[in-house]
Length: 447
Image (cartoon, rainbow, N blue to C red; front, top):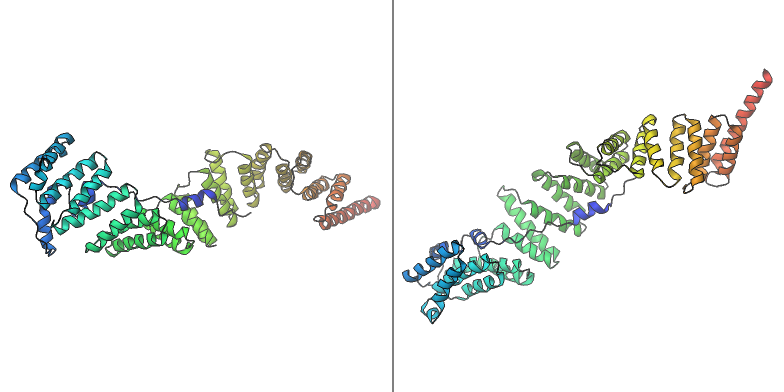
């Protein structure tokens, strides 16, 4: 019995990409690179100096600062109407011309925060673009805002513009964080440029590993998907093995087992799935059935039977004909005939075809229950749907022979002989039958 390795449910899980969401809360997005929505905006000039920035930035005047602070207080209290009203007054009625570029940049920055908080991402994006458009703002403020603009394009699922904006930001930053490479990888993934997606997520993973930090689970998953999609099974296995070091979840044990199967490493395939099973991770019937097949393929039928028996009893495995048949076959291969019989009886009783009754007859024959074997096989043949009637008739002939019903045995062997696939074996049994009858006759004559 072989295991169908390309099981749809496993392959689907391998192809399922847990997309790394572009989670943009403006405060968090900017904090990641050193800038909060408004309060730290006043520190940008100092940060620019630290970066040896050469542009000359206008000063933020006290009266403007006070108005911005007033708008910020309202925004933090989620009083959007008041906050916007303060900002509208600052740039309305010619006030816009009274503000210098740095002051306008901070006004638009706070507008953006308000729009984002109201989930008006398009206007938030426009406001951030207005920040960038102002001349002579601190370099750090411009760089950080460009990053936020790129993120907003991703939030709006405008992947191409997001990629372009992010690549532009990369040109202006000295030490981009790993998260930026992951975001770029996601953009490329969305436009199906998997080669670039893989290259960038691997950069992020390597950056974390170089700092002895554990790469994020979603990053590994993206890399795993991209390798698998390109049929690079070996690299996908490498990623899964590393993923399991830090995130030992059931889905990864199951996926890795399947991938070992793709590599035809059956012993590893079995050992990996077994590791998940002994930890109690395989709680679904389909997983337990796969485990049973792997045990059978690995010539450990007793373990297969135990798995099936336990699963059926605790109702995690559906008690249907096919599953009872698997249980019965596992017990039979384990030479546990007494346990195999009731399982095969249930399998046959739940089947509409005669096939399982003929198989049940085989098990009865193994258990020396010849009359039951005869009844079961005849029932199966009369029902129809038997894959190899010739083989069933051979077994029927054996059962009749062992039950000393020699005439019926001869009829069964003669019927089996008509099929060329069983002609040789049927002839051998007929010869043996004739020899046995001659032997018995001689015994009678001697008496």
